Amino acid sequence: MEIQLDTRVGDVVKANYKTAQLFDKNKIDFCCGGGITIREACIKSGADMEQLLPELKMMVTLNDPDSKYMDGMELDELCDYIEKRHHTYVNDNIPFLRQKLEKLCDVHGANHSELFEVQELFDATAGNLTTHMQKEEILVFPLIRKMVKLNREGSDFEKIYEDVKKNIALLDDEHQAEGERFVKIAEVTSSYTVPADGCTTYRITYQTLSDFEQDLHRHIHLENNILFVKALQLGK
Image 1: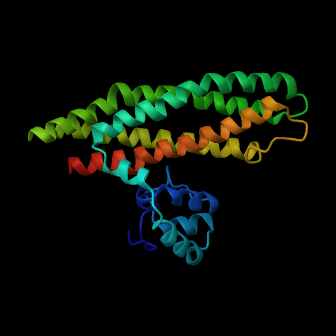
Image 2: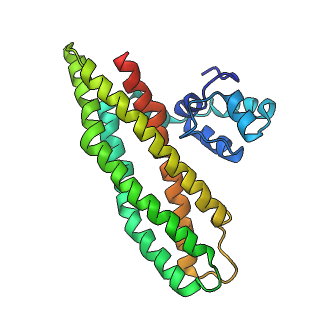
Image 3: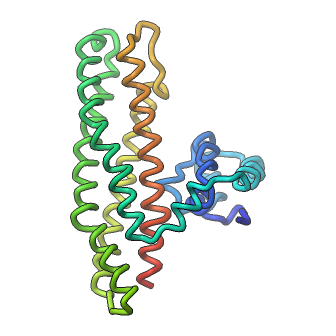
């Protein structure tokens, strides 16, 4: 892939997910904000574009079979993968994190009042993400699967495409909200830094929160930069 300053951030990460760590390092949002160019992203974040560009060009040459596999998936297959991998991960970890955050607030809240803000932020994420994923599984993903099926058959799918386009715009807004909420969680926890008096539960909870955020980034990347982009292209 030839990378220039006018290349979209999401296209770079789609080509090689290893580049995500460089964007993270430079405080560039590659999942929710993947629709803008490298130049625009650098201006927005204050990153040095002359330094970042050669680093991206080097990293994108590294072997990343997972990215090639994801980008080569049919859209209906990608819907299945997102549900089985990322939706399952979210559903499995929400109860665990809620329980651990409640325990931390009870035990350490008196000395670390920021824990209550983290708990409030994550509770909002848990509720909104659950509703968001249900919307995808019940409404949007079935529409995308049907659109793919009709396209294979050579049948008209204009009405379905319009519904998909409308719902993708709503899902994009919800992705943005959850991305911003986790930025706040990272800020409140000083990038998941456990205080000196933190116990084992503290360390496990913060590590799981960090892992949850990283999984959410990849989850949103697969939808915003691959699934939704290709679904809209198919309709055109």
